[in-house]
Image (cartoon, rainbow, N blue to C red; front, top):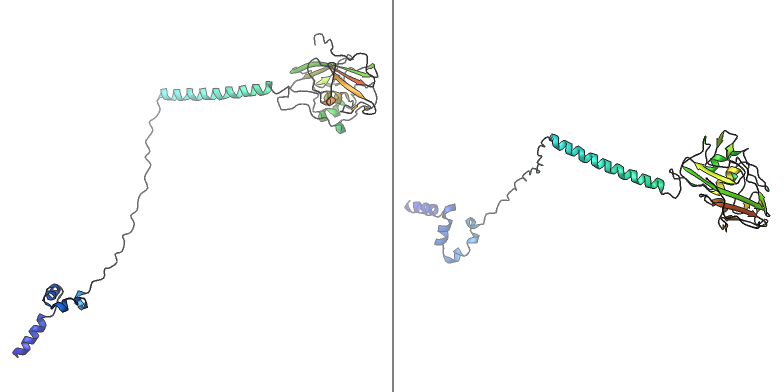
Length: 282
C-alpha cells in the first residue's frame, strides 16, 4: 500500500498545469529541455484574427452663414445712385454706337439697305427701243417693289440731293422728260424729275444710297453694262461720262451723289462733253 500511494503521489506531482511549465522545464535534463517543442504545453498559441472596427461616420463641414444686417437708409441711397450711374453709362454708350452706325455707314439706310441689283426680268414695261423715251408711267407702280422703292406722299428730306443727266445720240441732245417717278399726282418715288431740264431729284425719307440703274428703272428705260434703251454694244457703241471723264464701270451701278453731271453718249459724240451743270440753289 505504501508503494502504491507513493506511485500515485508521484503521478500526481508530475501532472503539469499551465503555471508549472517553466518550473518543469528547468528541472528536466538538458537533452529533454532542448526538445521542449515536442511537449504539448510548449506549443505556441495561434493569435485570433481581430475584426476591424467599423468606419466612423465623418460629418461634412457645414458652411457658416452669417446673418446679414439690414442696410441703413444711407447705404440704400448709395446703392441706388451707383446702379443709376451704371445704367446711364451703358445707355450713353449704346446711344453713341447707334448714332455712329447711322451717320457713318457710307450713305446706306439705317435698316442696312442700299441700291439693289436691278433684275430687268421683273421690271414691267421697260422701253428697249431708240430714243426719245417717254416718262414710263404706265407700269410705274409695278416696278417699285422689284426696285426696292416706295410710293411716297411727299418728298423726303433725310436725303435731298440733285444730279444732271444729258443724253446724246449721234451728237443730238435727247430730252429727259418731266414727271419721271411722279404718278398722276397720286404719289412720287425717291427718284424723280419735275421738268425737262434733265435734273434728277433724289429725295428720300430714309438715309441710303441710290444708283443710276434705279433711276432708269423708275423711268422704265433699259440700262445695263451693254445696253441703254435700244442701243447695245458692240452693234451700237456708246459711252458714259461723269463730270466730263469717261466712266469705265457698269453704268447701272453708278452711285448718285450731289451735283454730278452724267452724260450718256451714243454713236458719234457731240463737240463738247459736259463736265458740270449750273444747279442754282438746288
